[in-house]
Length: 91
Image 1: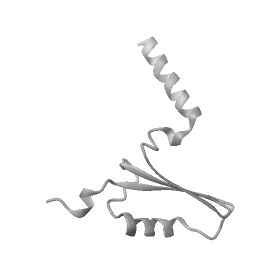
Image 2: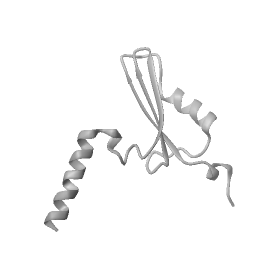
Image 3: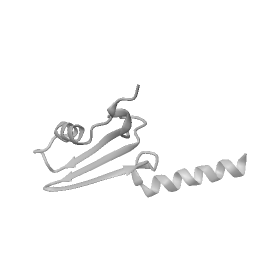
Image 4: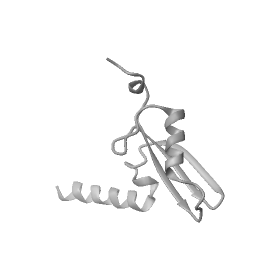
């Protein structure tokens, strides 16, 4: 039997803060769970809610494949691609 949470994609919260002591990850997690619903999965989630707080600036994004894309770290993506090419040429 399908439940209401099965209809929505699973998600996780990626939270970073710097130079700010007034906000807490748990507060964001609670509000997001109330508004989004669905399942919260820390490994293997369908979507990631990325929140970064720097001083009094908040940046928020909802992305697919954030962890698979090495958190959009270009340097790590290049290393991953180079490793894949070496495996193809050696194998």
